[in-house]
Length: 411
Image (cartoon, rainbow, N blue to C red; front, side, top):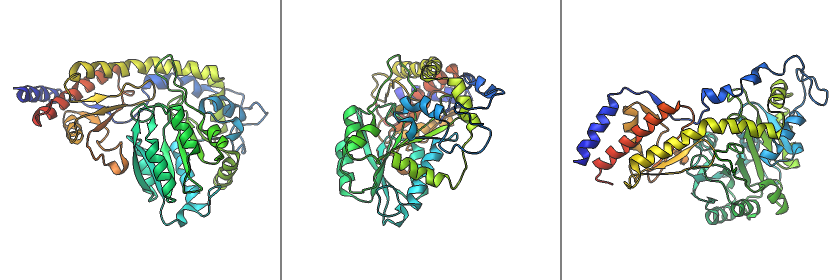
């Protein structure tokens, strides 16, 4: 019988005493090695293009040459970018804190003085975005994702009707976790839609702006320019980083927005620092050199991780294709794959995988409050393991899915 065979396969899997981890979207050691030269820079010359000694205080907004280097990728004019430390999540955290404790540009009061603050959350989405809002008591309102981005009919309806809704989380290119890139229509509607809150903010986390897996990079519409054209110049906060470009623990982050928002952000930032690590900024300029150098560097990343995404697709297709037990995304970039099993099965699949030594991101992490009402979505992070380990892990995941399916009479 099918269930007996599935149980035998699973017991064989458990007997291998595996210890494999697919939980987080981390670069592999081979990817980090691509940026080893960064640690030997800037050599004996610490002088920036404008003559600044980067070892000293100052330069709160960041080196102009680094802002120019990433301006095209992030779709933000250099003068409207701020360079920070290694974590864009920290910049998002600070942006929320500044809105809570200070009046946002165009706002009427501090967010902390509002009766209620809520964010729209496209799902499936990024668990750290959700956790950040939860930390500050910001209500999370899920909206479904579509192949073109968030369901804009629902987004527009909610944002126009409720002044307590102050923002929306967006990963617009190769989104986490399903790899969707927003259509031009979606971006235009986000930029121009009426909102009940005058200080509504789009938190535009362009984390995978240059993380392509194919030779035909996806391009998205310029949300900052479209918002300005629509009369909403202060609506968008753009975030980015080099965490998955150079060294995850020693990169740089970016905040971009309107001139008014940049001045607002710098006003708060200046109370906590006299300037970020300009020596590290100079390292990045000399290592990446220019936009062409950035593209070439990311091509090397793609060569390392593309085979892993292809392996996931191949193995899942071979072991689960046509069974009706699973579906999965095939992204053109980014770091994740969305894996969906029949409703009510995700938690059990993750539990069985853990018992077999395969660690997965918790079921539900892709939804606000860790609650996937359908209990069907699992995030796969294929970049960190070695290819042979990844293949074993994905084959083992398929075994777990077949067992859960057999136990529940599915497939």
